[in-house]
Image (cartoon, rainbow, N blue to C red; front, side, top):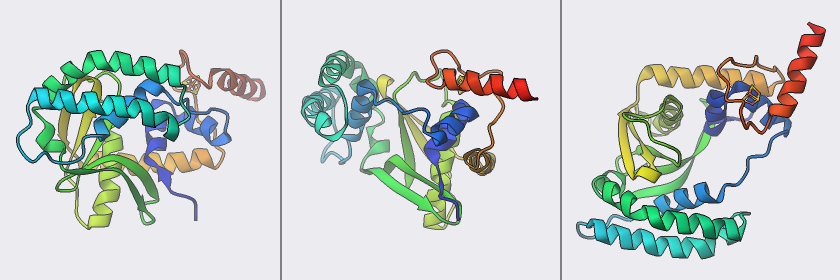
Length: 245
Ligand code: SF4
């Protein structure tokens, strides 16, 4: 039996199917970005429900203290450059006031929760590590990039549907809602999970399997090639294919 497709591979496929191929070949290594790791860890430092209502100022202090602690702890956990992490901490210190201002309104959606929850389904052939599982079995993913004006990005919606699928199989029911945390803006967007996206996840899972079996996908017209880690090898594969066919 083939190993389960990870939800992160579904995300990679949605960015560009060829990236799945090159990652599977071991031709690209995901770079550890200190700023992203720090921001995700900062959000995950919020996991216990507060005993009383929390103010924006309390949240600011909580995040500020976590930031100092993470600056010491993260280099022991991840291979990240200490100077890069220090600079990311300084940048984030300027941002936590804005983050607290928005996040305080949605904190009750997130807490209490478990973080970094490993999910796996043999039946679905899917696995993944969920950023947060909030009270009531609501899956939540943390994003460190820009938030859309409204709702969530398509890639986030489909990845969330993937986690909801695995979770639903474990709980023996449909998980109908999930959340995306756009951490830098302190926004929490709660969305419905639709059957069509669950079905998309399964279709993409099958394509990822084919790619991992060695099928090089076409280069999509809208692929985000600028600055892509695989651009050199991707161009070579493209040229070889054009030469022979
Ligand atoms: S260079 Fe473009 S087509 Fe090739 S893997 Fe990267 S994003 Fe995809």
